[in-house]
Image (tube, rainbow, N blue to C red):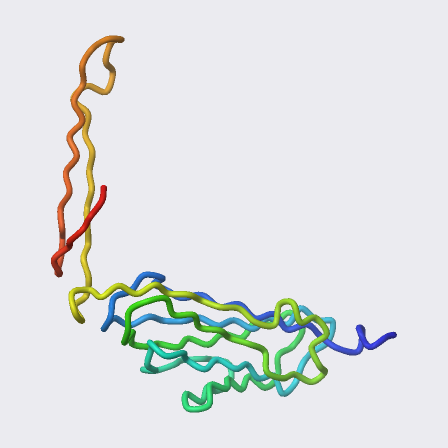
Length: 173
């Protein structure tokens, strides 16, 4: 059978800084590649093609380079126990659910554990009033007596404030 000890295990994780952005806002995806070993890896590449609904703005990585047109992050050498990170900033251009996947593309030696070779980050985008920056709803609740005796009437006061900048409709509290 063999082969297991001849390879290595590169684990890919992906997160986004805002899971509920509005159209026109920017989000930043963080993609991490971690070498679980048992060997160092060369020629490590990860594929992260941005899906429809988000448009590439910029990227930063201290580890290799990212080609925004190809979606290929070329890490190169990733020693056992080391982590590489890529940050991609994109502008949200449409409403709905947008799923972005990062996937290990290649490594030498080959990856021997495929169950952790890809990860997704999902955003759910609201309209934000047609391209605005959304709403910020603050809800506070007060009670007239926080230590009432049994049988005493108390009053709850709920305040809802739209901190803007867009109007909010259809709120349910």
